[in-house]
Image (cartoon, rainbow, N blue to C red; front, side, top):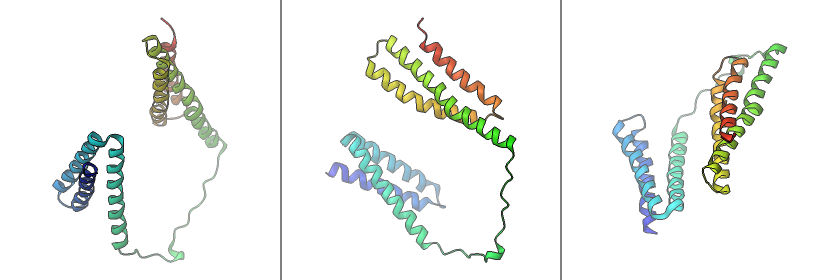
Length: 183
């Protein structure tokens, strides 16, 4: 029990050091993060995943208390009268803009999902050809698919216009098909 309690207290003290460095001296912030990281490493080494969960929970609870106290201590803001509130005009919907938004959604969600699934199946196939057992290769595919989909959605979102969003999905699917294809 003591092997979990002491590093857990260290994680809480790390949060306190972060609070001390909040808007103040930078060494307190470095010390806080170092203390939290050290406590979590010790907890993981001594108690495994359970120790990591306990230490992370203790640090998060301490951070929640620090933020709650800061929120309560913060003086209330003045509110403006309803007359002083700015008015917002709802946007006019144009068919072309709606079609563009639908195209962007379709390219990122279903097309990106299919492209990332093809790449995941390709990783599964290459792992099986390398001698991995079925459970391990399937676990690899289940890991690769959401990670690749998130990366692909990010890359597609940075493109200008729906037409340029097609090529990243095609490249992803092509790589997956090349991995999937037996040599």
